Amino acid sequence: MRGTRTGVLGAGALGLTLAYRLAQQGDAVTVIEREPDAGGLAAGFVVARRADGTPVYLEKFYHHLFRADHAATNLIEELGLGDRMTWPRPSSTIMRDGKIHSMDGALPLLRLSVLPFHDRVRVGAVLAYLKLEKGYQRFEGYTAEEWLRRWMGPNAYGVIAKPLLRQKFGEYSDKIAMPWFWSRVHLRSTALGYMRGGFQALYEELAHRVESLGGRLQFSTAVTKIVREKSGKIAVEAGGETQSFDRVVSTLPTRLSIGLTAGMPEDFRSRFGGGAAYGAHCLVLELDRPLSGVYWIAINDPGYPFLAVVEHTNYMPPEDYGGKRLVYVGNYLPMDHPLFSQDKEQILDQFLPHLQRINPALRRAWITGLHSFSAPYSQPIVTVGFGRHLAPHATPIPNLYMANMFQIYPQDRGQNYSIAMAERLARRLAREGPV
Image (tube, rainbow, N blue to C red):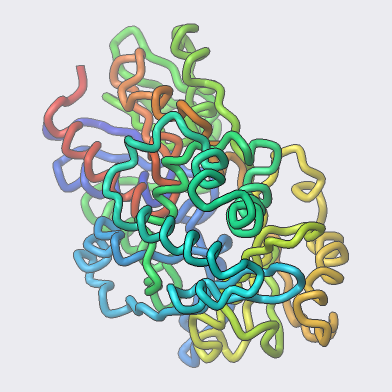
């Protein structure tokens, strides 16, 4: 198996970790990525520079790690980047009835004035149970709505959980599987891990390691077709050329991988090629002063055109970014939503009056920089029965594999789960080899 020529489609957390492990095992690896930089959904952009000119990155979409994210933290340590990790405990809140309410722990929950005391106790008991329950299987077959409404009570569900589900999943909010919600509570920690200077350093180091092991990385190169040749090799058309590999692993979304592959059996295509997903959008504001005093504001009030306001510099110090205050305004939306075709100034025009509901003093003059980022297929819609329809890694096309966040169940996206999947798949491919 030494010298196996392997193509990896996508240079996000999953693709780069997999390419690194396969290159360590002796594969001749080529990574093909549509975007100009490594990192996928965790890729950053240069938001400041240090005194020596070194760039400081901020992720295009907000990211952090949890204490349980051992696959990611172990890889960061292995690559010699552990000294960049820091674990603050930033504030997490909800906006309800025009006020910001803390959700950081049991005591703030017991003080949550938007609920009667007995509802607060009930919510706390439910969250404690979900945190302690180690398996998601007992929640299979239930929607989050029916399970939470029953155990939190209809009033607490309507105040706490229903608005969050509605803001994140829109028309699908009453269909979301309870195992997904369990994972959101069970695996989270109040301490959030971040790499000073941005997670971009992780992905650039992975790319460097792949190249140092003889691998190739092709950026700004979109894959247009995947074909199995008569020889059994897999041909990939990308960037106007065709390359032939002993095997290929696509880390693109399942629907996209299937759509690009010629000769995919219809039964496989119909079973796994569907599934709803939303796109992600973040408007990133650079401010000359703080917007709020908290890190995370989940919007539980109706009428807002965004689901969360994440003030990164209430998590990491503004001094890391030349004194700038950095704020994400985030959304998950159907990919035909008008927001995805609007420019950043148009979006700001819509968002600004609602941001002023959070801080009435906010003025446009505070905004010194503005960025708009979007990505398709970023949020799988995890409905009841989702786990029964996960596509296998091995496709019906011999030597063609798929690995992506649509196969991470019941977890919801995240760098750690992608890295963990890459580690598992690399060990499997080391055993199996191409046929």
